Image (cartoon, rainbow, N blue to C red; front, side, top):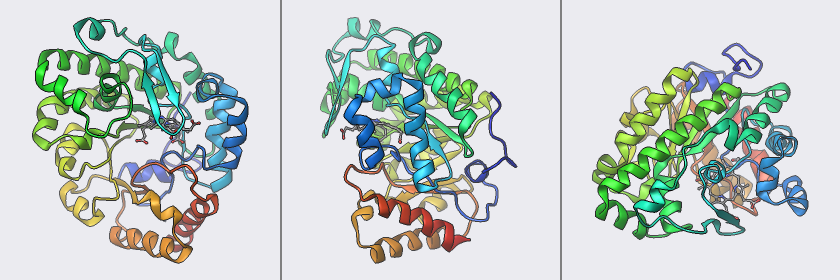
Length: 346
Ligand code: CP3
């Protein structure tokens, strides 16, 4: 399947990701398909999340819904960061209101070695089929994605969502060689997974290192950065732009840039002009606080305009949130942000 190219139907995200000028910043939202949508809640009445992901027609329909309902400039594949872990032999459940729960968290060498290498065509054929269906129907670029090794390792070691990340850090400090072995396995698996998505037709890729902000810069450099460098190196020959995202990562931004990615995701703690200074010409994505989608329209408007002004019309800005859309977000406010970005910047 050919990739959407610059000069294609709606190439704004692709142009911005390459740092090229656009008539206005493109806009899409992390977690733009999810429980805040009435249409999604309706699908979820009948199907569990893994059932949606494993049924390409349904997954494609859910992926398309925010493009149709909101008019965003990109679609993001509907799956979860845990989706490829099943194919590595990990048993897990997605618990509503909580997140992924791993049935047997990794504790020792035996459980690290038990992780199987990922063969995407065998483990996640439904994801690749969803991408092929979407490429027939979409008029905006399609973003494929994967969890970054640290963020996946945090679930595998903690057994679920975590506040202090004590299990991951204790393992990292105590079992350094084994930690690197685990990170190597996850890096190789996600490189293959992302490559398969690009080959199936994904036009851009996003790597979600959602929880890496839990680490100090020194720990990031020692325990994570070399693996991220290898991951981005493996993705470069694919020729699709890659977005590198994390939360609480202001202190890691320079190192994350060095690790790789064509676009750096900025959370809402990170001032955009400051990040521009640190990153030089590297394109950025972000960074509206998802909580602002619960604010009165005039407050929301003020903050959207502030971000657009802070970017000052420079090329290489993809408008997004600082993190994913929260459940219970009013749909009309999400639509309002899309309209604002489109009309103000036009
Ligand atoms: O629209 C999209 O963004 C595409 C779909 C998507 C999902 N998960 C579907 C999903 C994406 C990109 C993800 C990535 C993901 N999953 C991340 C990285 C992004 C981030 O937010 O940092 C993480 C950390 C996860 C792990 C995860 N899966 C969590 C924390 C949850 C939420 C738990 C809850 O119930 O609040 C999930 C479940 C999940 N994945 C939902 C969706 C739409 C929740 C809705 C449901 O249960 O149907």
